[in-house]
Amino acid sequence: MTGPHVTVASGEAPHPRDALGIDLRIDLDIDALLGRYPDRLGQAGDPQGIRETLRAHGIARAVVSSLRGALWDTAAGNSDVLSTAARDPDFLPAGVVDLRDALRAERVIEQLARSGVRAVRLFPDEQHADPDFPAFRHIAKRAVDHGLVLLTGGDIRRVWRPLAGLDAQVVFLDTHFYALADFILLARDEPGFHTSTRLLNSPDALETVAAEVGPERLLFGTRTPLYEPVVPLLRLARSGLDDEARAMVAGGNALRLLAPAGARADADAEPGTAGGGKADGGPEGKP
Image 1 (cartoon, helix red, strand yellow):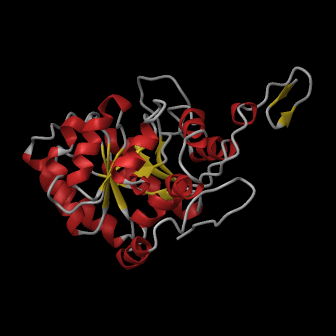
Image 2: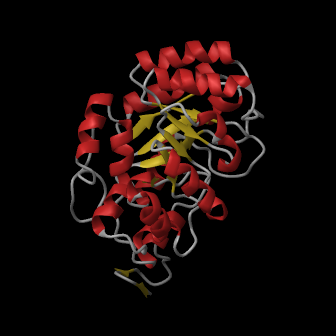
């Protein structure tokens, strides 16, 4: 049995990445989760399983957050993520806060910043936190004041409001291609608004964002292990972006955002100098 660029033994199914002929290395996935939802089937979300899935798909590293921290115990979840990242350089930690408890979130953000964490992830849907709640904007502002990048789930058409006007660096993790025009309208006014590519699977979504607001606004994301990485991989690999823009999406943009403030300013002066590329070469782009 054969597929593009791969030959396998009789009866052995090729990995989807190989069968589809995807020759693309991802330096950094912006969206991976430790743990699992208790009411959903799927992988356990343990570090080893996530690492194996990433490597099987040519993804070098991932930004990870804790579902345990989002759903039950913020302190324990953040401790899990920090210890996992300390043991394994393939993981970069993103802390979590409870959007329902602004006072405690203030202290958590301070602790995360002191620990060297560069991003905090918001879970408005899981925590039933309405974007119009005063705590939402307060927590976002406090994170920005500490120099943290905001990663947020939720419908961009609702969660953008408390994040606007803060001079924030934000990555919307759930931007669907149905809401692509809304993201572009917001990004025109907010230079710090970025989006994950995970759900931008229409034929021209990546190209449209790049043409309207620049490829620097796109960050590759999969939500491993809850979603199939092949879909966003294939879309990026087969996109009409040039090699430089594709490298930016494949890790360069995420590495730039997550760099310390001084290094980020230097990277902004020379866009496209870090990131992914073909699997057989290119810069590692590690901070």
